[in-house]
Image 1 (cartoon, rainbow, N blue to C red):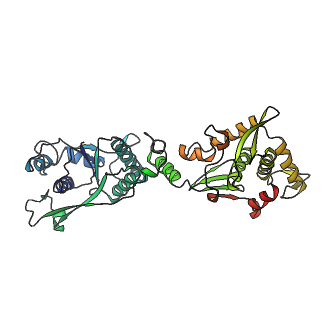
Image 2: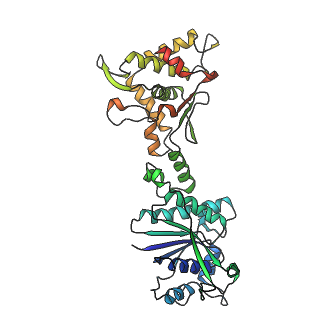
Image 3: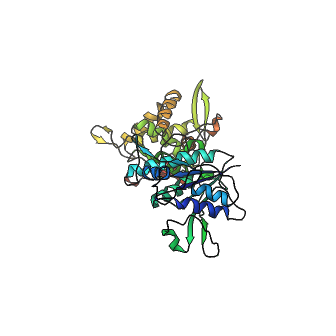
Length: 386
């Protein structure tokens, strides 16, 4: 299995040979078969076309080839140099937020392909380049890193050698040393229930991080009827149509109450039942439809409020109008609002596995929070109602 080293680099090419030497000196040795340098366009030119007075890193007579020869190892060839582009132009430095994003997306796509390759032994070094580069690498490795993937930093001793442009690796191990320090990092990949959905090929860095945050924080569900919003973890969508919001709320309320939803038939019509009762479901459905409309509908010039004849009438009317086909349409439109979220999260919001009795929202009841106007307590009202 090939060893691949990915290393960030700024203006000091010696970082590459220092890191490679340090890895070679490990027990057992870790010798890169492939080296990928992630940098910006200014330094790409320095690597490929060094100043005549400067010793070259690359090439058959470069310092990297000399290092491998000094250890009796075959030359793996020149490193592959990658650098970001932004709006069709090369990124010279990470000065603007858009430049940082471009570099992040380059690292994301590169490391995604490497971590998807089961034959690749991956080591990533943040020894070179700007601190921003190291921060991005840490983030991306946290998302993509597999068991066995390594992350490190490199230091030389004595520290004065860091400023010595003639130092590429220790020539006298008694007085010179390179230390490659492993950096422990949290591997979040195993906790992403739908890795392929969260880490989609071709998606940008910002979108990938957002989806990962949703998937990792997807154990909590918050429905705010006042704001007409649904929040999973730290991400929120707005469901502006009261009927769709009411439909979703009915599922969440049933789950929060610990009730079971299932389909049945009555008079040759499909009916949804709550804990085996069609009427129980209809009362819940009617209440949820009314509660999503009470703040913007009026009867005889009087706003609808809990317990008033207008509110109760709206709830009863909504209950009678429940229809399985229209309900499916409402449910479909409600689910469409969650489309930007990861599939694993969407399936927990409203899902069916084909077995009627399993048709429910996939959150633990104590992880569902429902916010109603005027601080109204849904559980107390629903227990009395049902």
